[in-house]
Image (cartoon, rainbow over all chains, first blue to last red; front, side, top):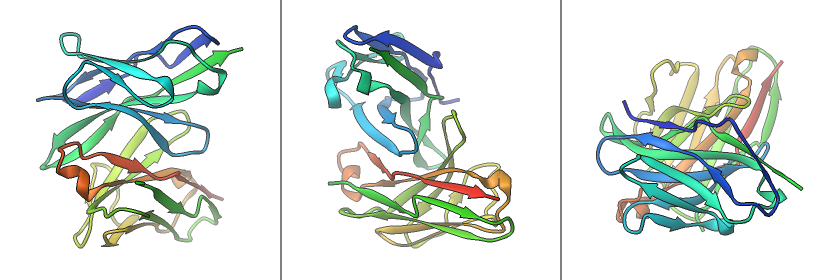
Length: 115
Length: 120
């Protein structure tokens, strides 16, 4: 079955420290991977995606993610966290099922950046 | 570019009434729109895939007679929650796939801001 796992419900990090939000996936074929951020009572905002090419993908707001095929992971990272980065983060994979493309989302990781 | 809007942003209705939620792609054409439901502190659950000019494809366990989806044009899809009950209270999010993004194979989706439905 195609799936996405975000093993941490919450990640706490001090402002200015590096942050990592973990994501692993299981999908048939080449994975198309995405990270989204959600603020309270808002929709999802696109951060970055991996389709092909360099394993290190740079996205919005200083975020980046590293695609690791052997570990089937796509961890989100940022060198220096800001309090304003506190939000809910979703990893997603595009899967081809029943003749159409769908996004499968992880359960989300709440990031809390402490001042 | 690639803006998706939803209307209303929040709605309160009485049990037994129907509520319509609109999803519009403002600056691109979307042959496919998706409707998701999100419970508090949970992930997004895909409810249905809506294709312009044809019937929506519902995910397993989603009642098609309760959640009516219409995708009449390349920029508008509507979700109608019929005979709403308190358990239908949730955050509903739509997304639209840019017709143009399919050429690059990315099939990127753009998400609306969501609609919070509260049924009393």
